Amino acid sequence: MKDPGTIRDELASRFAAASSLAGNGDMAGAQRAFAQITRDFPECHEAHYMLGRTALASGDTTLATSSFEKAEALDPGNPEYLMRLGQSALQQGDSERAVHELTRAMDEAGDVSAELIASLGQAYRAARRFDDSRRAFEQACELDPAKPEHWSELASAQQHDLDIDAAEESLNRAIALAPRDAALHAQLALMCERANRLDGARHAAEAALAIEAAQPMALLTRARLAKRTGDLTNAQRDLERAIRTAPSPEHRRAAQITMSQVLDQSGDYDGAYRCMRESKTPLDAVHAPLQTQGEGFLTYIAACREKITRELVASWPSPPADDRQPPVFFVGFPRSGTTLLEQMLAAHPGFVTTDERQSLPKVRAYMRTATGSDASVPGALGQLSDDQIIQLRGVYWHDIDELFGSLDASVRVVDKHPLNTTNLAIVRRLFPEAPVIMSLRDPRDVCVSCMMNLTRTSMAVTLFHSFETTANFYAAVMDMWLHYRDVLGLRFIETRYENVISDAEAEVRRVITFLGADWNPEVLRFREHAAKRAIRSPSYEQVTRKLHRGSIGRWRNYEKHMREALDTLAPFVTALCYDNHAS
Image (cartoon, rainbow, N blue to C red; front, side, top):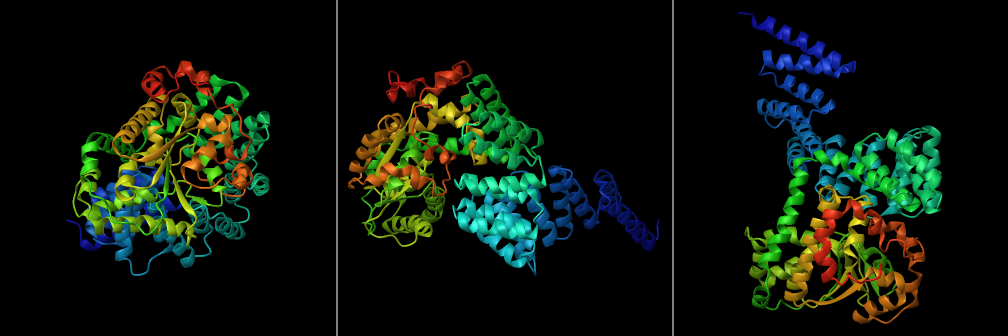
């Protein structure tokens, strides 16, 4: 039997040697060394922790997670171990666990580090808790203002809130700290292009490329700027380089999606389809939690479709009066033309529009707390008391007021989010007088456009993975609409993207009349207004261009790739009267 002192000396010597390997960049060697130490000294929590660190550095999140779990079990409540466990969960796509472990680390830590709070900000962002995410990054910048990466993360959160001036200021702070960091200049370029600040985008892209000639995001920005002017040759050249040099699958996917648009404009439809499909390849092994989120959303849609009947709606008692004018809910399906008409309404002085803020989903998430039960949404809606309805309305209006501040009583909120189609039963229960605008577009063109645009949420990415999955998702949502328009008793109007394109004034006049507002000629100057504001939708660039019919009937260029999807869409082509619609 070895002397305890000898054992300690041996452990210390081997631990130091393994740490030296890691310090010299030999992560594979360090991982093997720490793995052997954990086998020989299984009670050494530091060795399990270091094995997790080396595994995380090499991308083995499964080994990293199990190692951090063992380390924390041996030293319960260690905030460093909990932080790494949360970071590993985040890399695995498990945002719920990441938030849980990182929150535990915050609770256990005496002094909260900027790294910990920034990691929590990343976890909040992945969990779509954007307000919490921004606050966390603000705190990280306060704790360690010399770290450019914290300012970069804060800028991303501010950009999500469409607070572009603040985001630009944060990125300039980051660039001042690291002026030779090409990625920061490229981030600024991409943000400015998204915000239609084209001179700023061009300047920042060239600054990035002067530092790093093949900086992929700067090349992507320059390509998008070239595409805007019709310079498709240079756009394609920059995109080819951006795809080759992309540092991650996500960066490559963004370049491939833009390439599909360029090739479509060039008339190379087979090439465009190939790029669409290649952009989805990294998603073939999408993390299980994200697949579960997508499946869960479809399950929610199916349950509401089945359980919300005309009889159930008739059984709901009238809700208490609301002292605020009900919002307008503008719904549809992604890429159905909601952003174009939204920009027209936003140009009217009597409306403000939300640009896809997640206000209703927050109400839905809060509903279980309000009812104090595990009832599904259909069941919970019938259980709501007057006080609970007032409480849920308060959640909604608080979120709207955070966006707009104090609004004049004459100004009406237009809550535009295509997928709020799935939340219209909540609208009917909380705001039964609220008008609803449904945006329709040829289902076949919708699916092509969904495939050819970068989808922001990871859950939605799994639903738009192919023409077939996109068509299935469309069928689920629009079948729900056809059901809801018959059973909910909504006050609604259906508007068509094709009509907006062919006669914008007539169609938007029809909508404004439905909303009870007076006509205002500013509506037809929407392109000027849109060019001055940040737009969250992938349509941010299209809505600043002159209206044209180029996207109508585009599906015919991809018909041979859509055969199964076309069968799925056929009933909706008929139900929505697109059989003989000009396309």
